[in-house]
Length: 136
Image 1 (cartoon, one colour):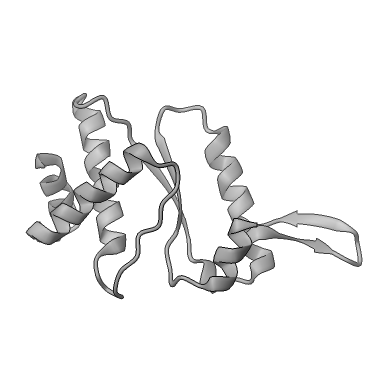
Image 2: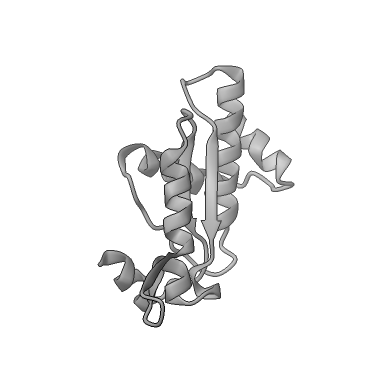
């Protein structure tokens, strides 16, 4: 909890009980899952929650506590670009494949040999089209 309080202080946030509880729940889900989705109301603190958690885990790593690792976050807003830019696309004229931002970010995270946690994040409004494309 001290690391979360420190993370809130660094982000100029007040450590409200509800926010802290949801951030702890997010950590607990990250420990047992490879992928997850954080949903909630607009301006509900979802982005701040994962940022504070990343800062807190980094602080614990610096202090050598809980055997935690620093976090590298690769964030993108999937609604700000086209599906081809996000996932990649085939050019029918040149017959060349161009990787999308997600593939590039994922490759960067996967090739990083450090012990840091790598979080590839879609931070933006949920859209049925990009969710369905991700499932495929």
